[in-house]
Amino acid sequence: MFDPTTLRFDDRGLLPAIAQDAETGDVLMMAWMNAEAVAKTLSTGRVTYWSRSRKAFWIKGETSGNVQHLVDLRVDCDRDCVLVLVRQEGPACHTGRRSCFYTAVRDGENVEIAKPI
Image (tube, rainbow, N blue to C red; front, side, top):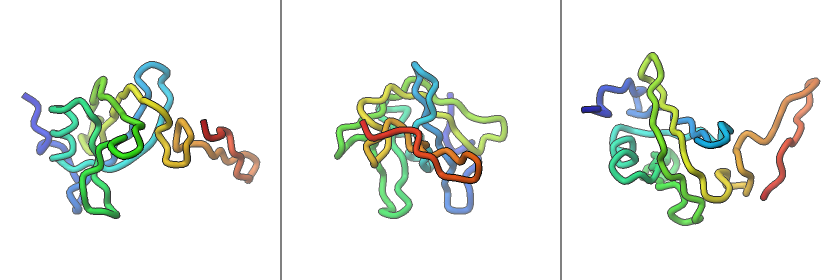
């Protein structure tokens, strides 16, 4: 049985969680999880992060409706990062874009590569 406390969290009790669209492979966002957020995600199927600014659980889409449904959770080789494969409803980014990674650096310039949906 998987035990989230076996993951390697930083000194704040957090680890990075990278959300990826399970169907397209698009990287959607990066947020933070603690052991309880990992456990909640696995038990509910709704991706739950830890908000560092609010110091509270953040169930993705709870207020916006842009829900992330868990498809698979993968642990990296060092056990200090997780890849969360999701079925995303609506935009993942608070800016209204599908992905938070909408700025490319090309020839030393910021280039917006995705508009809000």
